[in-house]
Length: 310
Image: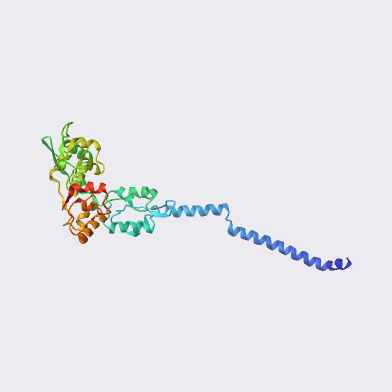
């Protein structure tokens, strides 16, 4: 115990020196804290001064503002002629600006300000910000905006730009053919598009579709084939009849594989089997020869039989 007590004993001079050192440490630590606080934490007065400088600098640039994404400049521009740097000055990202340039290089045109909304990647916020500044040049606007068109209607001449409503009125007055009444029929194998449009439920689109399918088949042999034309209403069948006397047939011994494939009832493998059979066995003589081929089930043979010649 005496050894430990002697070890920790401090005499008078050592105590004075230790007290001086501790005092210096406390003073220096306090000074460092005070000086550091002054450098990193500005006073309220200094902060207010800094804010004033920032507000003043902002007022010196009236053409710029912060849209929440990045600072951008706003000015009138034509999206058909503006450069990539112009789009970036307007606040668009570089990749968005490149998309616009690529669209134009491929022949794309902005004919109205709202066409600009089609730009790939453009956000709703960006479009709404730029919309008031879009100016489409006359070279890119529809010609109908500048050149009136003469129309004659009910005995007087009228010059006006045709609006959508006017075109709709003209269609109502002149375009629709008179429809068939109950008990009236049209021969589906000889009718043209105008005649087909007389059938209730058949317009120009379905009329063209029916004739295209009729030409591919070689003619209709049953009413059920009309329903193979997608979208044709079943009620339209009540106004149709079929004269199957003049069906166009195909000679399966003379047509190439590519020509056989054009028929709606023959696929590639069936056409190929016919060609292979001719190569190995000679010409087909009747529909019975088709029954020897694996890709021709009975239902398929019955369907194609009216169109075959040997």
